[in-house]
Amino acid sequence: MSWNTAFEVVSAAAAACRGCGACVPRCEVLACAGGADEPLSVGEVAAAFADAAAGDDGEAARAAVAALAAERPELVLAVRRCCMDGFCTLVCPDGIDARGVFSALRVLLHEARLTGDDGFTMTRVDQEWHIFSAYRAVHGIFYNDLPSLENARAWGADTLFFPGCSLVSYAPELTREVFAWLQEQGASVALSADCCGSPLRSGGFADRCEAHKAALVSRAREAGIKRVVFVCPGCRDEWETTAGAEAFELVALPELLAAAGARPRPEKVAALAGCDDPVLAMFDSCHDRDGRFGGPLRRIFADCQSVELGHHGKSALCCGAAGAVSLVDQPLCDARAHRVLDEEPREAGADLVVANCPTCAYTFAATRRGDAAGAVAGPAFCQYLELLFEAGFDWSGVFGRLESMWSGEYGPWLAQELL
Image 1 (tube, one colour):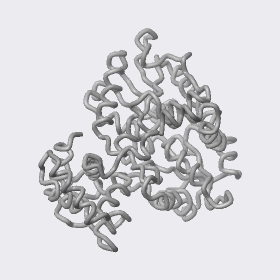
Image 2: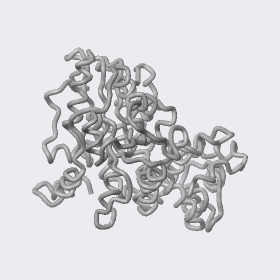
Image 3: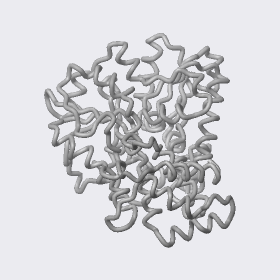
Image 4: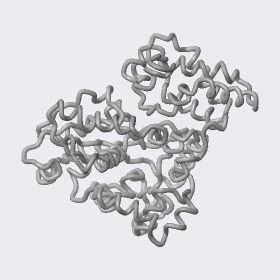
């Protein structure tokens, strides 16, 4: 996304917004975007930047945005604290795509040199080496024996299994189990270990994100892929918004599991919940407001005792990870995570929170790890695949391996490549 394109997106939102404030009540960011306890709507935040930039694609416009940031730092903080979970879009009577607006605002901040690569060097997923590819290489996690996107045509594969970077990196045995299950269902399947590109968007590198996604789509088309199966709602979201992706059938894995009659393993449910006959609660990703994952998952777990969280489905809350907010406000991320992992499940009477996104599960694991003295403040959690297959996530091992990467023999190389 160029400066001009970003400015057009921001200006259009500013013009469309009537300032009704429908987007403000649930958002702790917008509630103080204008300063101490002064709320601003999405359109009003956009208008401040649009007025400053004035549409000029030059140094003067970038300097004007920098001057606005110096005068009103709360606006910059609002842009960077936004998790871009999309709920404000859902409630906007003017149909403003808030996620797109704040993504464009991050482009303006980056172009005005108000933000840089700091904190994002490890998630440059359009490069050969990033935190996920390095983790797999250092710890010997390879899938060379399976059909891949590069040799899918030679294998006659027409289905691409897209696990997402968290699952393919941190749960290789589970990834292989799901791949084998797809084969058992008769699919001619290849595996992609790629990232969908969302970390680039969070960093204000929207143009690189779009280029990365376009390359993915092009490679899949050239490989003869007709169908892409997603574990994660966020990955499906990124593919759906990529030009050319309409050539593929984009399928949520829970749809296939539900159609095949998949049911949770009672012993896994009890073991992960830490009690007999537990009460489950589905945690819907903020990328799954259309219910394409949550709907079939509720059918799969229909025989389990379950409750709904206070916010679910279209009104789902962010797990705390979205938007790379941790780089500017870790306490806010922690508060968001505790709200959906501890507070709402406890109020609903849930023993086990079942996340439909592997990144949400990672966030929950990091939250539990960060709790003082390892105290568990609320229910247990897992990712839905852990209840349907034998393998799962060993989060203690994952975090240990992430730390050991930097102190072992590969530490100097990692520092050179990723920092």
